[in-house]
Length: 446
Picture 1: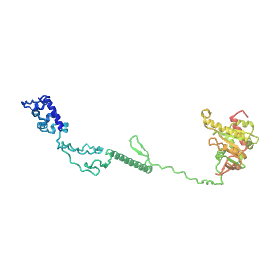
Picture 2 (picture 1 turned 60 degrees about the vertical axis):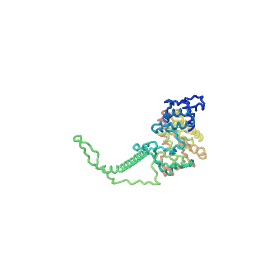
Picture 3 (picture 1 turned 90 degrees about the vertical axis):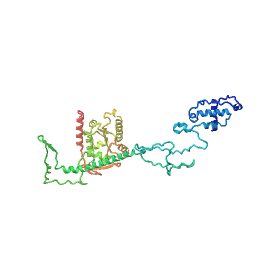
Picture 4 (picture 1 turned 90 degrees about the horizontal axis):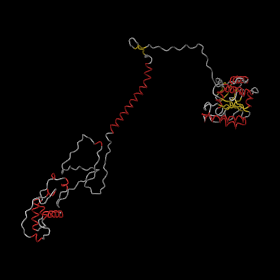
């Protein structure tokens, strides 16, 4: 404080003193005429002009300097000070930096409480906020809660975490309530629909009799209901009903085609046929496969099986006319090679349908008639091919790798599923049908 006053006094002296700078204290102490102070000599501005009386300051400084006393400059400045202006006439920055005496202490600032961001639930536009108080008036301090530390706690004391209760935003509550209402309404509507569907058949059956479709009269526009007409009565029962047909394991089933029976019994590993009616049944199978107009099929057999079925009556012109539906091989090995070739061609046509005349569709089913005997090890792999190329194997004799059935002379086939009736053809009947088919398809060869 003293250094500030000395600096201010030095500035005033340099500005106002009539004494030359080179004068000594002796010369300054020489009595002289008092020089009248010049009004407005200090040229004070701002806060200094408001704090000091300019006229008194000039007069006092001149008098003290002329006397040669510089130790009383502080008293001169203190005497020249005006009354301290009120805070309302001072600028905020000037009031903040006003001087305090040595026995005064600046007021202690209260510790600031951490500010909390207001939650969306407290942003109520109708809620009134407390007004601002004039400067110098403070609000009473609130009692600190358990979670808030006291302002008088010493520094360094760990502050416990504040307990903030998580309150869900009120903006989400109406939305969740609305979704719950929509869900409940949907469940109620679903229950009503289910009840309506359950009651609708009963209601329809109750009113179906008395209510009938109405027709509108074009003249009067009145709806008329047709009278109920009962359904016609059932015809009277026959006085002499037919007796029920007995059915049991001793009676064979109804007759079916030979190809259907052979294909059913030969799946999946072939079938062996024994009995007196085997040749007639196999002739019926060959004749139906060659002459039918249904799905394409090819029969492969060796010379041994052909002689067993037809003897020497099956001549070479007839065999050539029935190819390729009927393929006769000399030996069993030739028949196996022909079957493998047929399977390869079928695979190629299905893999490249654009190069096949049939587009890979409607490939013929191969029926293989053989007498394997001791060579069943070479026959079995072909019979067990995949479902797309597996030939239907009809074997003469006992077949150890599949089922074996017996055929009687009257056409009764005994199978594990039960007896059934199958068609049988004699040699002459089969040859007549084959020749008629060959003459129709290829005229002029006989």
